[in-house]
Length: 90
Image 1 (cartoon, rainbow, N blue to C red):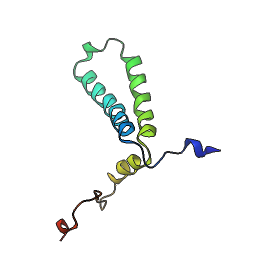
Image 2: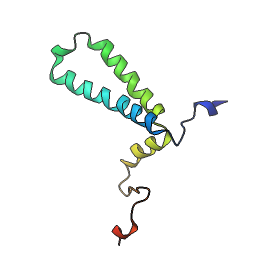
Image 3: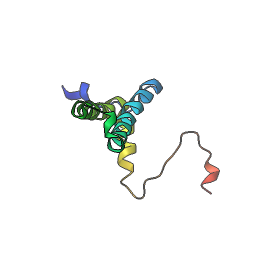
Image 4: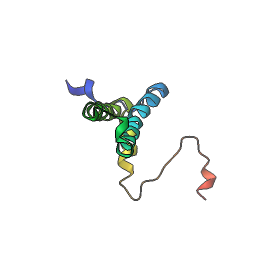
């Protein structure tokens, strides 16, 4: 029943880019609205829309992105790029 709401692990490159824009835009708008509050007249609606966009971006980006965010909080997490040369580790 809840399987249709589960995050897919792999998403297409276009969906990933759209999700990154949806993830970064609220952060940028929030930063600008703190520095120059006169730019945004009705901040309540803007803050509400940006919060919803940030929440929705996690679902658009998929499960692998959530794992990347979670890895930020683990000291021993390492990045492994697909197709990377193994001789750099030696």
